[in-house]
Each structure stands twice: as structure tokens, then as C-alpha cells.
Amino acid sequence: MALLEVANVSLAFGGVRALSGVSLEVEEGTVTSVIGPNGAGKTSLYNVISGFYRPQTGAVRFAGGDVTALKANRRAALGMARTFQNIALFRGLTVLDNIKLGAHHTLRSGILAAAWYLGGAAREEAALTGEIEARIIDLLHLGEVRHAPVAALPYGMQKRVELARALAMRPRLLMLDEPVAGMNREEKEDMARYILDVREEWGVTVLLIEHDMGMVMDLSDRIHVLNFGERLASGTPADVRADPAVVEAYLGES
Amino acid sequence: MNLFIEYSLVGLAAGGMYALMALGFVLVFKGTGVFNFAQGELMMLGAYVFLTVNQLAGLHWSIALAATAVFALAAGAFVERAILRALAGQPLLSVVMATVGLGLVLKGAVGLIWGQEQRTLPGLLPRAPVFIGEFLIPGNAFWSFVISMAVVGACLAWFRFTRSGVAMRAAASSQVNAYAVGINVPRISALTWGLAAAVGGFAGVLLAAINNLTPHLGDLALSVLAVLIVGGLDSLAGVIVGGLVIGWLQSMTGAYLGGQYREVMPFVVVLAVLLVRPHGLFGRKEIERI
Image (cartoon, rainbow over all chains, first blue to last red; front, top):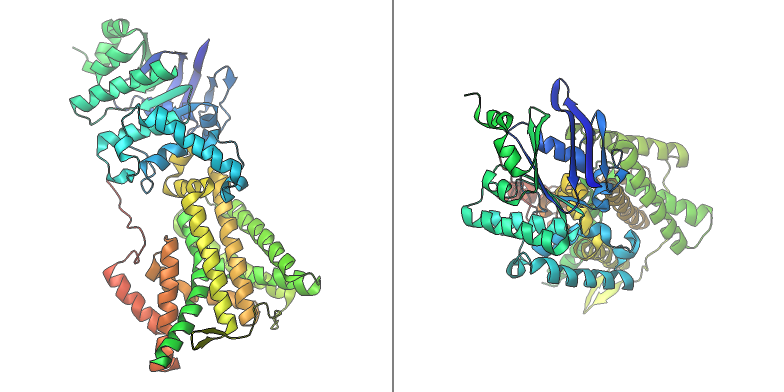
């Protein structure tokens, strides 16, 4: 069964239709990409999936349950983690604090116990820090900057911190919104490798929005193409590349 | 020289109280980006709750203080839920004006319930003067300083070290972001307002114990505007420095220039600070990226 199912979702802002009857599925364990020209509705789709926008019609099902009515923070707790197109980190906090905030919902001690830092809460937090150090910081090579404030880091590294924070949420579905936008070739290759490592080691399902076609074709098991808020095509990278409608949407009529 | 030291100590002690009063403003501003003009009235309300539990119900002051804290926590959270959330998405000015209105409503309601006459709280703080070396500080001033600093310090530690404190800072930094990592943002905002009201309640009880209690007690809160601007509206540590600087300055002005300049001097400093660092000495500079 599909881990994520978007069924017939429509979203309009006043008279502007951002999404019209979009349906798609993301199979567990795959890397699935959503591509399309600018303004096709990719980020709107992400916002519907993660709960920031409520669609006028349609449903979002995650791991077998209907999550359409749930708020964004509840969906995050169910195992949906996302990164943002424009880096969205807590700028005043350090790298480690940013990452630990990703694990916020996994800690069990209640808000008051945690507030006073009582024994159990402190122990839980120490265990969490240990796990983050071992599994995430090492994996993404962030060890040297863990105590630096994120605002001071170069762009590529901030993107990596965002990925690390998403991983700390122990997600089942990792939604990346243009993870390599604005990166140079070397940084792009690193990021692609991190994404593959993460899938391999964590068994996370990855949903990807990306304009870098080389990366999309290399990484994806399946691709969905959006155009003007509608699903234009779906299939393997080879299928999509050969689809005349997709070529037309990207290159214009010849 | 002795006069200088003695006035300095008294001024610094008064500054501690300023810091506590300013703390409630900073908590709300830092946590939710709103300047809460009703903070002073929340302070005053706390003092009346304390008075009622302590004198009319005749319970021990420690119970009354705990009741004040619980009541203020609930009142702050209620204000957040009833007013702030209803105005979500509205221009900031509307939200700020709503807090002005809330302040007026509270002042009027307290006047109706408890009356306009002056009340006296029992002497909570030991009156016996405290000697530091050969210098003497009034007991009231000394102990309110100690308590204020303890409360401010506890809040600082909360924000820095606890998970809910970090979650508060996170929600303040970016709400979307906080939602995305699974933080229950509405609950955190309610907690922030509750905490600010509780801090205000403490400040109100201390103030009313030193002065007297009328529905106009809250007006005093705006006198810490200078503290807020010197320290920075969103800096907890700045509150301490701002409070101490202003307290000391007022005391010095009173001693050497005469009492009539006491109230003016802080604002001269404020002007100077605004010219040099518009975001306060410790505040965060807002940088908008386009």
C-alpha cells in the first residue's frame, strides 16, 4: 500500500486555482519526485500534504489514515518531515539546538516536567543528544559546526542542517523542497549522496521537489509531473523523459 | 563618596524591581512579537487577587502567592486564546490596540469589583534595614531586589536550558518552522502569555506591598519603557542591565541634581541609546532579507 496518497486535491486562492484535482501516490521506500515548471503548484502541493494549506476538496492519506483535518504539527508528529525552499531554520539557535528541535515531538516527558528539567526529562534529553550526535551529525558531517549559530554558516551547510533537523523527527516520509537549489556542482553531488545514504540507512521514503533534472533522473524511482496545477504525467524517469506532453510543457510547442 | 555609594546601592535595588516589571513585556514581545500594553493591568490584577485570597479569605501569604500565580497563568493564557488568536493575521497595530483596550477594560472592571479606594497589603518583606558593609539599605528595597533577580534569573535559565523554553524561542523565531517540526505553536503562545502574566502578578504583589494598591497601579508599568528601550525589547539579559542602569541613574539624579529631574533623566538616556543603537543595547537587530 502507498505510504502517502493524495486524492483529488483542489486548492484555490480566490480566483487562482493552484491545484485542480491532483491525485498521486508515494510508495513506501521509494524516492519519488514532483517536477514541473515554475508556478505549476509543487510547493502548494507540499503545503497541502504537510498541513499548512487546507484544500477545498480532496483528501490526504498517510500510512493508511486520513490526515486531511489534522494540523501541521500533528502531521509532523505522525512522521512527515519537510524542508523548505527558502531555508527555514531557527536563526538565533545553534546547529545542535536546531536539530534537537526536530526531535521535539518524540520526547515523552510532559511540558512541565521538561520545563523544570526534572530527572527523567534530563536523562531523556541526554540520550537524545547522544543519538543525534551518533546518527545524524556524523552522517551529514556537521560535527565541526554543531555549536555554531546557524546564521553564521554558508548556504550549502544550512541546507544540510535543515535536512538534519528533518531527520531528527525520525520521519517515515521526508519531503524535500528544492534541496540543491543555488548550490554548486560539488555541493549538489554531496547532497544527492546524503539523500541516498539517508534512504539506505533509515529506510525513509523520500518525496522530492527539484529543478535539477540530472539529479531528479538519477535519484528518482518515480516521477510525477505537474503543470498549471494539474497532474500531467507520472512514471519512471525513462517514461517521463519520453513523454511528449512533458517535453512540451518544459520546452514549449515546437 | 559615602553618599555616592549609598545612593548607588539604593538605585540598583530599585533597578531590580524595574527589571522584574520589564520582564513581562519582554517575554510576550520575544515570544509572540506583540507589545502588550495591558501588562501593567495584569500586574495590578495579580495584586488584587493576592489581596483577596490573603486578606478576605484569610489564607497564608504563600498560598495567596501561589493562587496569584495560578490565576495569572490562566488569565494570560485566556487573553492569548480569546483576543490574540481572534486577531491572528490582522495588522500588528490592531493587535497592539487590542491590548490597550484590554488594559482599560481590566482597570475599569477592577475598579467596579474592588472599588477605587486605596488598599494596603500586609508587609510581606522584612522592614529591617540590611547592612552591606557599613552601608544601609531599606529592607523593602533589598528584598524586592533579591526576589526580582531570582525570578528574572529563573526565566533566563528556562529560556536557555529547557525544552519548552527552546520551543518558545523557536516559535518566536518562525511559526511555520515550529509547526513543521511538530511544536504545538498555539499552546506555546498561550504558555508564554501565561508566564508573562504570572511574572507580572509577582511584580504587582511586590509593588503593592511597597507602595499601596489602587486600580491605577498598572500605570507604573509604563515607567519601565525606558528600561525596555535601553535593554532591548527582546532581550532577557538586557532587562537586568536596563533595569539596573535606569534605577541607578534615577537615584543619582535625585541625589545630585534634585528630585525634579529624576523622571526625566531616564528618557535622556533613552534618546541617546536610540540614536546609537535603535534596537537597544542588547536587542536583536531585525534584518529583513528581500
